[in-house]
Length: 113
Length: 113
Image (cartoon, each protein chain N blue to C red):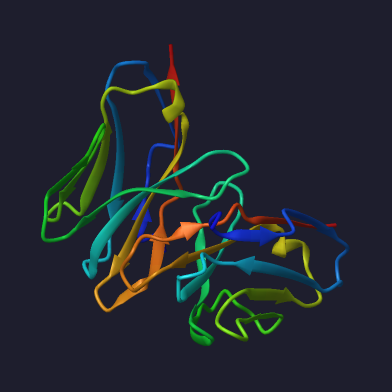
């Protein structure tokens, strides 16, 4: 039972363009969402988060959008840079269970020159 | 403080042997988490501690797995009688309080042959 789904295993984007990574969830109790970035041979690194009381959160080149009615969130990276090439994981936690994160399967982003 | 430290980085063991991994969290973080990541999947929650108390264990954590955090600082994860299905990346993370994004270590990659 995959409660957090990232249906695109990979994405390839040209440098300077926008990267859009998508994530869907099924559990209506999820109320906090996070994106992590992972380079090979390293642990995931926290990128940005959003609470269910918001529909957008922005941090520099990274913006996360949340559509609660569709149970969908997306991460926008503008402009994309070669150093953004990594695996991106979407994660969620439920109200009252905030210590446990449920991760998606990840999307591998490649930014080419 | 250099972040979350895990030791060893890699471990190859024969089936049936016991292995132990160590995690040193960020010193001021009272919460410590263990996750497991297999190929093509996102990290899966195993267990977590608040100080020295183990507050939750996933059903993924069979009786062969045991985790400790004896003084509320470092933690160990032991796997007894290893099986090939235990081969995975074992990730440790810490956070200062409930509801914060974790800081992950670089993980211990276990290969059971």
